[in-house]
Length: 402
Image 1 (cartoon, rainbow, N blue to C red):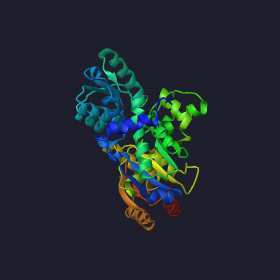
Image 2: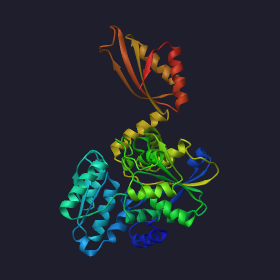
Image 3: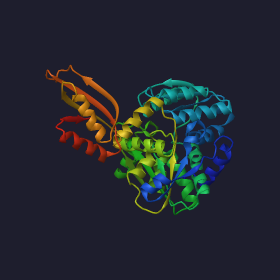
Image 4: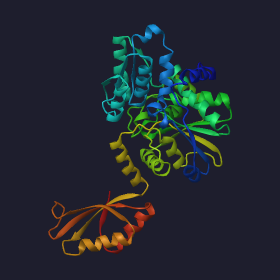
């Protein structure tokens, strides 16, 4: 390892007046569901809304004065952008951030609010990165990599020290994985302080570059990435981070977007915590029983809470559907008085709550004398949906679900 615990301790001293020590909260809900003692490291409460300020400030504050005057630049889907912009503002350094054109408006505006110039390019992190590298060559600015940089890794590793200071008896730490900067720093710090501790990464299935690389036993580039967890949507591991992960990380789990959406809903509903998709991946791994043990003490790093409100509303609905808490039913009725009332009475008897109703007399698939009814319903779980469907069938309704 070229990065050591001493580098991380030095980074902790360097960032102490900028990065706050975030809480490590015990989660009764996740503990009960998993059969382990689960603690959540709330980096969503960090300055700029994510852990990224740690590595960004550590990197930029260590720059030679001659490099500071030229300014810094970065490529990011959002959180690293805000971390770099905030650090540059605090140190009085010019800053340019290249963000994917599909980055959320809230993250773009937040980055600008910290004083950075923002350029939109590409449709994902990797394309924004290529544009940023070209601009770096043209401008002479120092490029601050989102994850594949020793100072960045050391800064992120300060979370590992904090977690073990807060709960020394931990058996494992669960870490969201994109390019690997966070898990690399945490693994180096935690394994140095407590060699017996297990470090597990969690990737989205649509961007599982580390899982693929570990399976292939060599660093692998994905052909494409697709996930709601934009903060971990990376095609290829970093050179530095790959070396750390394959040596120090015990395993990398993969979760689907549906699992991530459900985890976001659980965090919001049960823990009153707002989490972005990448951040919730560790919780998704717990909810889908990825942990290979029971009765252990586990910390999950909740890496950030910078989620666009409109996206959050869609994810909440998606998560509710995945959890069996929301369903859309479409059926056809005779166009006669009382038909709709009978249908709604059936819904009421089944204990479902109506969110909305659409009643259509016209449509290419409709036979004269019939109407189409679309119902959006709140339900308790998948068993409740199954019970509702059985009641519909018993009443003679033909229907489809969305």
